[in-house]
Image 1 (cartoon, rainbow, N blue to C red):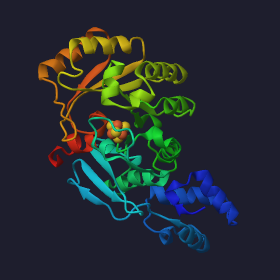
Image 2 (cartoon, helix red, strand yellow; image 1 turned 45 degrees about the vertical axis):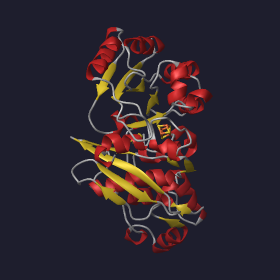
Image 3 (tube, rainbow, N blue to C red; image 1 turned 30 degrees about the vertical axis):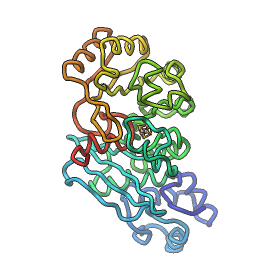
Image 4 (tube, rainbow, N blue to C red; image 1 turned 180 degrees about the horizontal axis):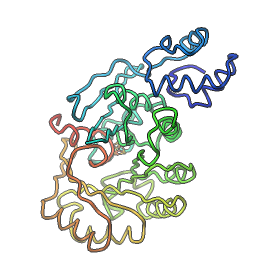
Length: 346
Ligand code: SF4
C-alpha cells in the first residue's frame, strides 16, 4: 500500500495500522487529522506515536497535487487549477452562496464522451483520477475557505460513471461522519447517461443525489448533441432511470440545456413532458452559454419562458436556472466552469 493517503478508506487505514502493529483505532485518529483538522504534515499529528508518524510519512503522500493556482476572490466563486503529480491539471470550483459552500469536482483528466457543446470532451481523454485526487479537491476547498464544504457536486471535468469505482470510493470518504462529513443528500453525481453506472449506483445504498444530463427529448437529436446516446439510447436511459427511482425511492434531477432553434420549441417541451411522465423527477432548464467549439445560441427569453410554462402545464417540476454555479449550469465539464462560473474566461 502506498501513494496518496487520501485514496484510502478508513478500513484501508485500519488495516495498515494493524499490519504495522498498531491498534485499529489509530485509523480514526489519522482520519480526524486528515479531514477534521486538515493537517498539512504528518509530524503535527501529535497524538500518534512518533514511529507511526514516521511510517506513514515514508509510505504515503499527504497531498495528491502540487501547489494549486486559484482564480476568483476569497469571498466569491473561486476556481482552482490543480497540478497533479504527473503534470496533468484538473479544475475544481468552490461556490459560496449564503450558508452553502458547494465544491464542484472533476473526476477525470479530460473526457472521452465528446458532447458537442463541451470543451472537455473536445479535448479528449487522458486518464481517470484516483479517489484521493478527487477527495483532495474537496479538502483543498475546505482548507482555502477555512471550513468544510456543505455540498459536493460531481459535475466537473469527466464522466463520473466512466470512473465508477474511484468516484464511489471518494463519495464514501467525503461522506464519512468522522471526516469531511458532507451529508449524502448533499452530494450529487451527474452523468451524461451511462446506464451501467446508474444501475450500480442503485445498489450502493448511498443516499446521494443523481443528476442526468438529457438536453434532448428525441433520441436522434440527443445522439447529435451527446454521442453517449449511441451507446445508451434515450429510451433505454429513461427505463434505467425509472428502475433507479423504483429501487431507491429517490427523485432524479434531469438537466436540459435550451439551445435556440434546436431543442427549445413547444413541441420539444411536450416531448420532454411525455418522456418523463410519471417519473419522480425535477428538471433544471439551463440557458446555453456559447463556446467557441459549438455554434449553438442561447434561446430567446420568450422561448425559454414558453418552454418552462409548457412543462409546468404538464405537471413537470421544472425550474429555469440563470444564476451562476456548477449545479445549475449546462452539461458537465469545463463548459460549466468557463461559460457559467467564470464567464469572463471565454
Ligand atoms: S459534458 Fe461531461 S460527459 Fe460530456 S464531454 Fe463534457 S465532461 Fe464529458
